[in-house]
Length: 144
Image (cartoon, rainbow, N blue to C red; front, side, top):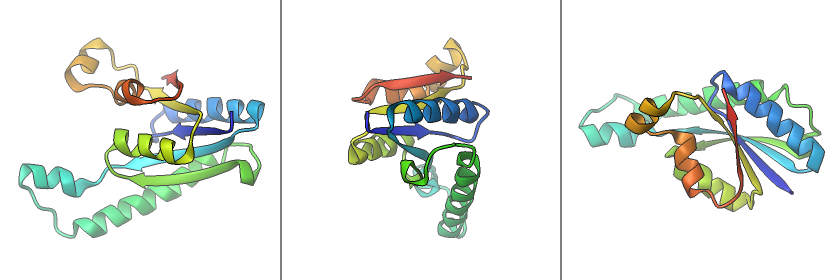
């Protein structure tokens, strides 16, 4: 195993995802990418006919906050600097994350599951479930 991608969303389960990812990377010598995907709001608002003043400024601010928060969260990971990298991506979560996995030729994806239950999964869908269905490498789902 050479490359592990740890996808976090800054929720409570993110700490568990990072702990599992660190453990696996340390045990295998793999490089760990700690990733967060910022969804672009412009596409969402265009679909529904809404406009937001200065949406580009808003998205830039969201990206900056995500970069700062990601580095802060990942600071607890105890790996050599050349074995870990934080990356903020922009776009639809599933496609963006899977494209990043392909680009990095990742061997494993670690994600969290919030455990919302069957009703929420059926009505709303689950990001982890959608990623599981499309990912071509093993996925470790860390429960909340």
